[in-house]
Length: 135
Image (cartoon, rainbow, N blue to C red; front, top):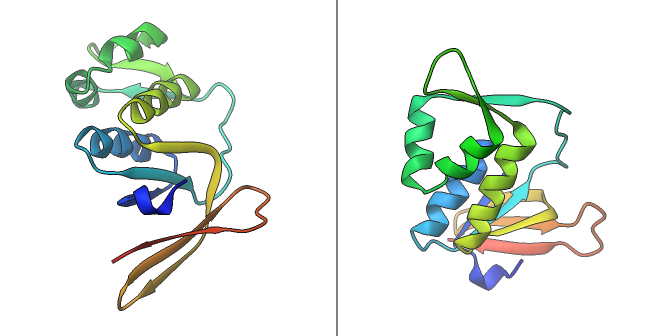
């Protein structure tokens, strides 16, 4: 992660965080993701994508990739998709648009001052954290 290249640091790797990274990166905002804690995906967990979510993913050009990995639900046009499949599609899209999405980076600390915000980002076994500042 290059601190001079980042305009927005998203602390979290939820589906909403990943979608935000896709949107921001697509709009040209230099974006990076760091999880507040290591990822713990529940095996077999699924997410229902409703009509509004699919509208957003369709506008981003991701609907086809998501539907290829999803299964229909009783209420069309909603679908059900495995959480890891959804995350995979979103991570690939975010990276394609230029977001930095590491698999090992996590948020170690966050400090707010009158001059802005400084986040310490490091590996799961950090030896020296990287400081990212924004005013």
